[in-house]
Length: 449
Image 1 (tube, helix red, strand yellow):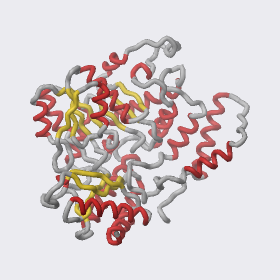
Image 2: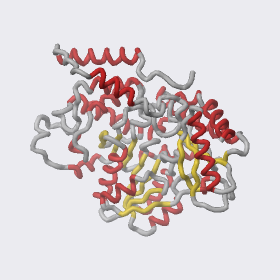
Image 3: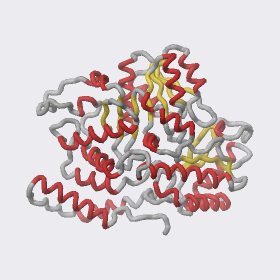
Image 4: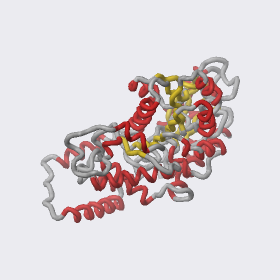
């Protein structure tokens, strides 16, 4: 095998055909719509245009946070698009709205919320925007703080919302520094602390348990950005510090997770949940035309977005039925395998001799970063670019990330604040079986660059 795989198998087509037949049975017989002239040719051309992509489905693609959705999610989404429901109002998506409420309740339960208010969004960015909008409404004039390695959108979102924002320093593992955070809290103007469980650069897990202890003293809102790492809450093989962070997640005021990452979904599926259902009052508005058929809660009444794809809720609900988010289940085991793959890759790179420089700590989730040996930051960064290019030529696709030199052993470089590093995201369940092959190619690329 060369690492590629069929992304539309006969089994998938049969699954979709069966689901479509079941849907059609519920609406009675209808004349099939004739395909317009040129449809086959246009679709064929579109398919050929799609060749101009990296092989995201391959386990040898270990670069950015990209992987195809699970076939179950794809089939459910495609089937639901035959109806094209809109989950803004019950008028536009009765069944898919009910599925959304159930799917979000399962996510809230995974995080240990005894009660909640939440919904799906079109992205993690929109989900984080809603969480910070609520935070700003509840603490007007207060500042938002997040680690310097938190996602860049928090600073941007704060600016859009007119909220002050400050970045907090990180420790040698790229996690929020509790000491630096307390220095910020002593200023007395912090209303919200964003805690990241799974940074997009390195997969670092901020010490949520320690942050919650500070909340008891200083009083502030805790928002958890778990867009990337949230589903690792069900993994049973994380390190002690990461486990402590995830173990405290039920104490957060709001949480964001992206089902379109580890949740096996197509893009266009984020989620925000609030521990206090009372925040729904902040969304209150009137619409003259969308809320007239039911006295029940419309999802548009607790969302800043209007039209949203109900198919995303159908896909998520269906996938959660097949893969329940529970400890010890198939879904959890898949995540545990990703974590093992990262640990294995870290170990193999560490055994490779003097070619690479590894960060101070092992991967906390499933992201591995490492630098190339070099007398200076410039030399190391230039080598990283060459290894990246050579590995791609040999069929293994990595990513590049500019990271603080403080992640690496003291004295590695005499000067410089950041260094260009190589990065692998091992988020496919099959990556565990391919780590040795990936590392072998990386070593060959380093030797041949």
